[in-house]
Amino acid sequence: MSELRQSRACTREWLVEQVALRLAPAAARTWLQQRRDEVVARPELLGEIFPAVARHVGRDRLDDSWTVDEAARAMLLAVLATTLTAEDLSTTLAAVYHYGDAAEKRAVLRALAVEEVAIALGARAVPLLADAIRTNDQRLLAAALGPYATAHLDDAAFRQAVLKCVFTGVPLTLVDGLPERADAELGRMMTDFAAERTAAGRPVPDDIQSYLVAEGNQNGLVADDNQSYRQES
Amino acid sequence: MRIFDPHIHMTSRTTDDYAAMRAHGVRALVEPAFWLGQPRTNVGSFTDYFDSLIGWEPFRASQFGIRHHCTIALNPKEANDPRCRGVLEVLPRYLAKDGVVAVGEVGYDSMTPEEDEVFAAQLELAQRFELPVLVHTPHRDKAIGTARTLDVVRESGLDPAMVVVDHLNEVTVGAVADSGCWLGFSIYPDTKMDPDRMVAILTEHGTERVLVNSAADWGKSDPLRTYATGQAMLAAGFTDDDVDQVLWRNPVAFYGQSGRLVLEDDSEVAETFEGNSILRGARAS
Image 1 (cartoon, one colour):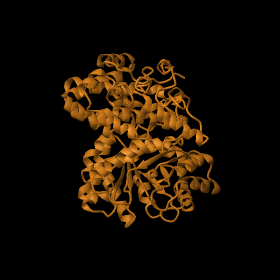
Image 2 (tube, each protein chain N blue to C red):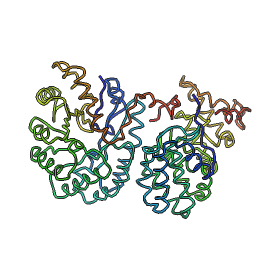
Image 3 (cartoon, rainbow over the protein chains, first blue to last red):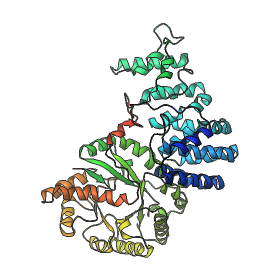
Image 4 (tube, rainbow over the protein chains, first blue to last red):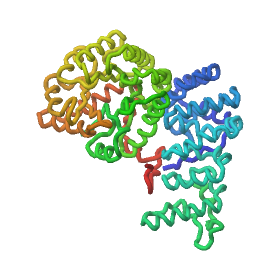
């Protein structure tokens, strides 16, 4: 089974093209085009359009990172990134996120991988990441840890988010900021986690092995093969 | 026995309940928005609750292989509190959601003018969003409340096939059967209906347009009353197919009218993250 990848940074143009290319049924394409024109003209309509997207465009895989509904929703937000002020864009994203179901929230988080969206927002969407990371829903946690989180989460928040992935079972291959942002403190946290698991007679997840710190070497990572995390996909 | 519980308040139940329900054949359910015992005093309390019905609770259910859908509405009891009236304004956002398969619970509690207004407004929303309606009937003055409910539904112009009138009993079943609306029955340990009385009603009225639910919530109730009713039906001579119609095909047909029911035979997807199994070690809790 092919592994789902974290959405890498992409441009609005790429996303618009991919959706146009992959969205096969003509009716779905027309529906999305009309809704896109509508939200550009009247952004306040997004509240009812955004939830309805998946029923009209479907939920198939678009590539190894996006599903069609996620990409279509992210595209609507990406289009708004070029027509709204940064402040209005931030308010709009926060509203669709806060009123969203899990699929809608994931799409908002994934839209943060679109360069135009990320640049327009600056750090304004960090509270959305914090919300997603606070939940116990692995799908939201994973969607939150894309390139925007790599750029904007402070060290303490990033480490806690990674540890929560380990704790709740999100594969670390889905964390965009690893292994680059792994530091000594994260190594210590992973090592303590592994010790607690071992003491309890429970298994230690394989994908944290390379982050564990050897006894007597609390200053650095033992692993020298972190790149392997990047290459798995 | 495969069971679709068309009315159960899982927010109030434990993971043990989810596990026992799945073990007894419950594969799907609908959780209607209702009151929580403790009255709410502002719109934000409702949106947090609605968010739980479309987010957290389906996630919890999925970990036990159960499909969770919900209905959304301002319930009749809290419709009487002016501080909660603003809920009507946020309903369109929620009625557009994938997991929302009906407007409900609406209807009457004390039959006040406020309840009249909120009931009518939500029947209009159901038409606008092309959703079925789950109507609660009052616990007190039930026969009059049910008759008035049927009048309001008739005047709204809604197709009665899009409406289930719930919490019926021997006294109210006849009028609802005549109206063309679906018949809902809540099977409780002590109050409302019990499995044997339910079997008697099924024997008299047949299995068409009948929905049987546990309506389990924060009060004394039992999420396995649907299963108990299936067993009572079999003991009384109903066939497996009759039981399947009442406990599975009827609720699927009723809520399926929303076009939003997702029931493909992939209950194992629940254990996976977008097609990939990721649950390991600690379960989210």
